[in-house]
Structure formats: structure tokens, C-alpha cells
Length: 377
Image (cartoon, rainbow, N blue to C red; front, side, top):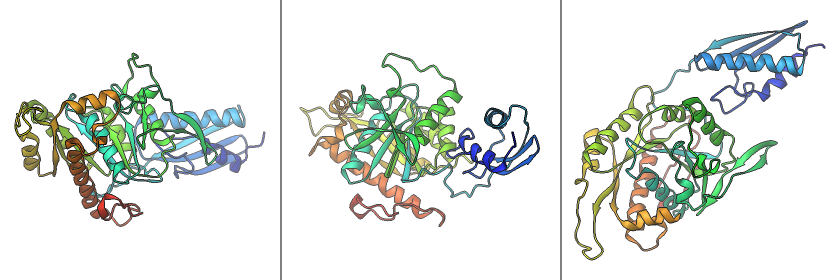
């Protein structure tokens, strides 16, 4: 069988390099394809020096050519690694068409209400007129299906531009994707880092998110492999860190802020939210009891010189609403609605401030609050 360069190049469009959102031809990784009789030479440039990624790319190319064209072909793959230089203000990752801003919601430790805050931020943004999606990246403890009352839902497959894509589940005008949609409620996710990262990449790049003003990413607690995978895969606009006022939680929140601001990650921190800030009993509405400490997260924000986005009181209805699958901020004319409106406005404003400092090559950014209802593209 005669080896045709154009046919081989077209076939390479079916291969994606690990961690990339585009195929190796579309992304520009394939620099040249040459054929000499029964020999094929493919020149490839990738941006990561990881040996397993280089090996996989080489194996995928050889397997494709042997199966599709000739099992006897001599295939040589020349791989060159070129690590792109980063502008200190440049957002990392590959943009997803149609998504304007990606906000990572993180916490230094578990149990501080990060997922609850994410859910209520999302519904408040939607009430303000924004188009919102949530990526539940807490692989080992996904909670968004419960919080949005869609535990029994499954993403369906749809065709977009000739490609099969996952359609996110929708609830309260929020688009959702979570590993929880693909596992039984009692099933533990026992995956090593690479498997978890692959699942996340599928939910990110193989999904039909459509037009979104904000994608909120509910990260796992702590600082680890999933966080690094997300930062490498997506252009994170900024991060929001959630903490309680408790000293132990604050110590871990400080590590979370440090992770985002480190030279290797360099993601702007939009601010800190203090959850479970105080308790006010119904029978004593004017009293505040600082069960976990007073203004700890606020003081931490001042010490770290990052914005303080607001405080959420310890209220039974917030927990109940999450358990029943209806985020508390949906309760009209309630204290919780007002609390999250203020915090969400602060998040939007800090996003505006952050985007004003972006390089001029950034195509999409929020340019004005405009009553929290306008996003300029």
C-alpha cells in the first residue's frame, strides 16, 4: 500500500496528546509528515517533558499508521519538547470556546463548606443574569448532584460539529458535570492521580458547555494532584478560598492561598470567604455567637493582602437546603440570599479588577459590573 502524506496527516487528527484539548494536528504539535516508500517520519513538538506523555504520543502514532495504512511501515517519530514561556500576568491552560471566566473554589481542608459556598455562588450568579456552570472536580467526594437534587440524572451524549459531546445536567439554570453522575452513590472512587486527571479532562474538553459567563470549579480540599491538573488544563481566571474562622482551618487556608500564588502556578486569588462565621439563634436574632472564633478569615485576608469577600453565618437552613437539593440562596427575601448576594457581587467585582490587568491578547473579559448583569465579549 502506497503511503500518502495527506492521508496520514488527516488520520493524525484523530489523536489527542494527553492533557491537550485539541487533536495533535489542530494544536500545531505535528510539524511535519514525510513518507519515503515504506517509511514514515513524523516530527512532533509537545509542551511537556513528561516521559509517559511522549511515549504515549509515539505509540499512538505508530499504532494508527500500522492499523490504518500498513502493518509493515517503518514509523519514526521525532519528538521535541518546547516549554512555552509564561507571561506573569498570563492565564495558564487552554481556553474553552464560549466560557468567559473560570473561577476555582478551594479550601485548605475538608469540612469548611466549600461545596456549599460554590453551589450558592452559582445560583446567585444565575439570579443576577449570568450563564453559569459548575465542574465538580472533587473526584473522591462529589457532592453537587446531591446539592442540586440531580442524583439520579445522567449526562446524555449529543453531537456538536460532528463530534460526540457530553451534555451537562441542568438544575436551577446551572449546568453541572460531576464524577458523581457516573458512579453509584455507595461506590468509592479508587483512582490514582492519572486516572482522576483523565476523567476531569473528559468532563472539561469532551462536554458541550455552550456559552458560559462563569464556570465554577469545586476543587477537592487541600493541595494536590487534582489541583495541578486543573491549573495545567484550564485558563483559571482566579481562585476563591473558603475557610472557617478556626485556627486549624486558617492554617490550611493559608497553604491554599500560597499554592495559587506560588511561582509554578501563579493564579490570582480573588479573595477569601469566611464560612460559619457566627451563630445567631432564631429566638435571639440580635445575638452573635462566634463558635469557631471571630473574624479569623478576615484577619488572614488582611495578613496575606488578598481581598476579603464576606462572611456566611452558621445557619441550619443552609445545611438543610443543601441536603434537600435546593441551595439556600434561592430562598427569596432571606438573610442567606442577602449574604450571598453581597459575597457574589464582591467576587464579580474582583473578577473585573483581575481582568483589567490581563494582557491585551485576552479576548473575553468582564469589563463592568453593570448591575451584575453584563459580560462583554
